[in-house]
Length: 261
Image 1 (tube, one colour):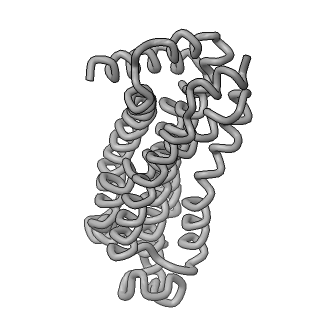
Image 2 (cartoon, one colour):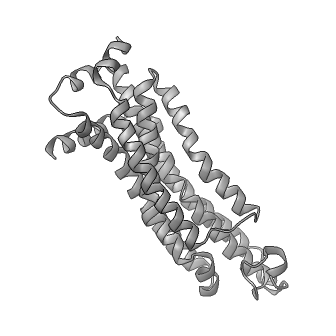
Image 3 (cartoon, one colour):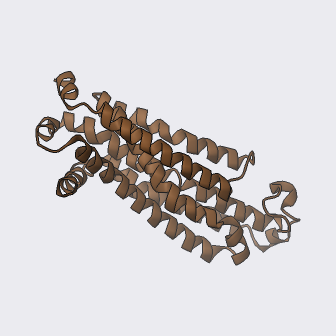
């Protein structure tokens, strides 16, 4: 455990010197909080007359039957922005994990690290936690600010409809599982390439599935519900176990050192 803590401390001391990593951990969550606040404020600025529109059922389907279009629009936007917070657990750890291995080669700190008696599992566990922990903390904190600000800006009925209980499950449970998923892929890529930018670009594709879900919900092709969130959580648990096991097997200390020399 002490070795893992040492790896985590070492990772944080090094990766947060990288401007891209610092931006992803600090400014991306802020952006994801400010964007919905500005959207809700802009909708409120349209005026109280918007609240007298017809029922929102025609425009938004079955999402909010019985509400006027203004309130229904606010609730729908809340659900869209809640889904947006599923991107943070992917973006933040990918940036850190992709840099964690190949980045050490550029700074010539990988060889001394691999020469220590630390096991591969301890090494990768420390690197994985160093990427996952900031992502989870940043996501949960940003989502909490989003919830409080949304609660203050919309009616209780709109808030209850837009922020369903399954969104809490998604952020609290699925978020960390997504972070582990992203980290496993990023570390596999980082251990096989020799350039940090290449690792970051390739690992960045893990965000695409969530973006596709976001587009689908935005276009009304489907709506996220509690059952889908639980299915996703179960699938991610299986995928994470498989990918983390593969990560340990793919990471070959001697091969990496020989290929990179």
